[in-house]
Amino acid sequence: MTSKQEPAAERVRCGWCGTLEDYCHYHDNEWGYPVDDDRRLFEKLCLEGFQAGLSWLTILRKREAFRKAFANFDIEKVARFGERDIERLLGDAGIVRHRGKIEAAINNAQRAAELLETESSLAAYFWRYEPDPASRPKVLTPEVLRTMATSPESAALSKDLKRRGWRFVGPTTMYALMQAMGLVNDHQDGCWARAEALRARKAFKVPR
Image (cartoon, rainbow, N blue to C red; front, side):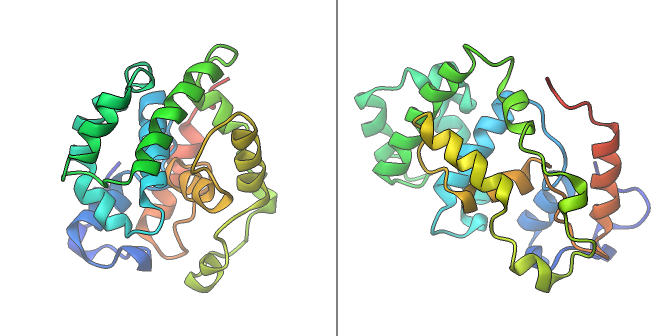
């Protein structure tokens, strides 16, 4: 999903990613592009939960360690994690060692497995919460984006997930997930990736 029109160093990007290589790579290749793979969605959801109260850069730099620790975020495997796994994860310096977040990730894998008993995929479930394009701001400036920590759709998604027993899925965390998986395109106006994400969304087939 990288542009071939200009060198990466010369791209105009969203202000939040600055010039750090970790952020720029994530911004250019993942953030805001539509996702329909359940493993990737579950990973994004878990990592957004682990990020609560921390820098996203911290999570990005630990992502490979998270993948190794959580069986590459295979839903069925994580759903079978038990107390021995929790103790193993609490001793893993490569990840965020927070018991509540670790237990939430395991719980959410179990809840995801339950959801998949009635849904065709996690992706199909999450994409139902894509907002109507007409409800989105016409211009996305940094000032406008700073006011958009939640949305009616992220609040509705959060409410339904909590009803189903999921944890660490508040409206703000769910809005961050929606940004990350392309349910919303919050690349600001002037960012080179905004048009790329729009093109990817037009070519994307929404899972049913």
